[in-house]
Length: 256
Image 1 (cartoon, rainbow, N blue to C red):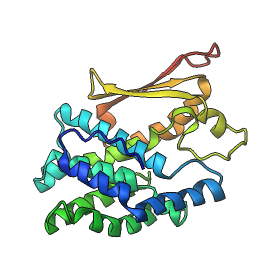
Image 2: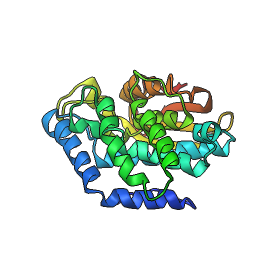
Image 3: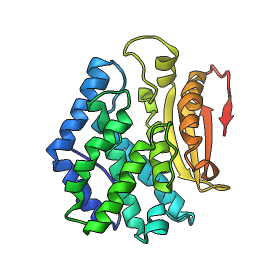
């Protein structure tokens, strides 16, 4: 499996991701998650591709926030390092949806049950016992908090929650839709042309959502805005949706 995580100088992150790539249990959880989601429920991908995208976006968000001077909670609350915060968001991104292997309903709760044993195995070669407990707890918190029913209480968890909603380019929208059926879900899902994440000017992060037509507003308003609200990152992200490429322009710009 290819996981193009930008490790930088984070040796622990590199080692853990290499272990994930070879872990047959995780690979099977991703495959089984899509048996439930795609094959049986006819909704969108919740397997390894989605996991990799979310992990990368969450890491990108975290690094932009840290560059702006914000401290991750694992640093503030547990006196660990920023590199450990990167491990937390990547692992949470990779494992947040494996609960779909059990059922979509309550999948976040199933994910933390399945991820608990996985984390014990993955972390043992990289952290002391006490450190493993801290990393495990923070990853599980980020996993459960990607669901809107739970409020993220850490910077890391907020990054994972927002990242989950940003896997939305060219039909990969996170609002489920029945394959082949014309509906506001499917039409809106196909309207998102690109999502760009940059360093902001007034705030640390600027997210630009480029839409092919106005239908994309449904994805922005119903999911991305909903995930951003209550994430703890509202004051640090500027979200702007624009339409490019088609003449139909009911809405020229949508800004949060």
